[in-house]
Amino acid sequence: MQALFFDVFGTLVDWRTSIAHQMAPHTDEPEAFADAWRARYQPGMEEVRAGRRPFVPLDILHHESLGETLRKFGLSVSEPLQWEMTLYWHHLDAWPDVAEGLLRLAPQALLAPHSNGNLRLMVDLARHNAWQWDAILGAEITGHYKPAPESYLKAAALMMLDPAECAMVAAHNGDLAAARALGFKTCFVPRPREHGPGQSVDLAPEDDWDIVASDLVDLADKLSETGL
Image 1: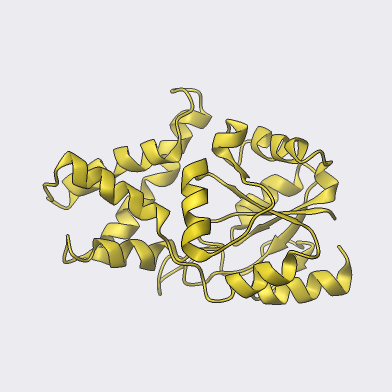
Image 2 (image 1 turned 45 degrees about the vertical axis):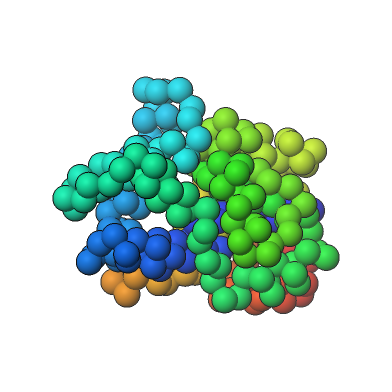
């Protein structure tokens, strides 16, 4: 196994807490706002995946869904401030294990985010959290939002690797299932509080993924032991 591709939202960063913290000055319901904004994430991408609109970067989809969420909460915000809020997604804090985990994984494989986030978003998250990547992959690079097969296949091809030489690391069973169907190795890292204390999905592995780890540090240990 030569490369590890990482889902980012939820797997590497605690988006809910981060968005709620940044929205707190603007609403009395910051957690609910974060949840409502995130709930428009998949529907926005599905318009692109289904071919009903051309590919646009996630920042554009986040900006559009922000306007809808602001209206839902009865908030009136200027257009410049709406763009500032859109960039809140560029300043999400990592889960506590991520920095050490990435440092311990770096000698074992090439590391790259493979996210639906756009390139600048990934660059800003890396700078915000002091991550070092060997490459940045994902939707804007491949022109396809996960879980479209082309997203995974083009990412491997850009690294000059076969899918079997790559592993997808994610906290979402659906992401791993899509990657495995194309020949990728799979690593599940649960984030049981991604959606807050009432989370009911992705609490446990739903298939026999190649590695199931408690966090990225544990993943580094298991990868070193198994050689995947």
